[in-house]
Image (tube, rainbow, N blue to C red):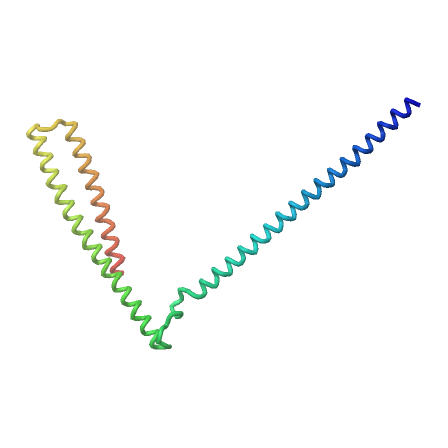
Length: 168
């Protein structure tokens, strides 16, 4: 009988453990499903908030707009078209004047740079002839002048390209 009572006691303990374990597991499942539900709801709220922001941004864009006909003021039809064409002509003229000024400045830069290079080369040759500088220094300075001259030639080439584009 002692043997049977020990087995009976053990089986009761195991059953009690399983019942309480199942309750704990059930509680964990509920907690997990509750947290999942809360996360889904939070994500839905964020999604809704994002949709509202996009909608607000669209409305703002529709109100502002970049279309030329949106802010006509008092002008209607042909008057508006004529005013718009005049603005376009003026803008084109301003761009042309700016381009002309840039080309002129570039040409002046090229002329000044070439003159300065010429003067520097003469001074360098005079110093070399008078043996004031070593051959190594002469080579370094000459290399710098050559690089500068290449940069000036590149600028001159770009200016010619700009002029040809302007003439077209």
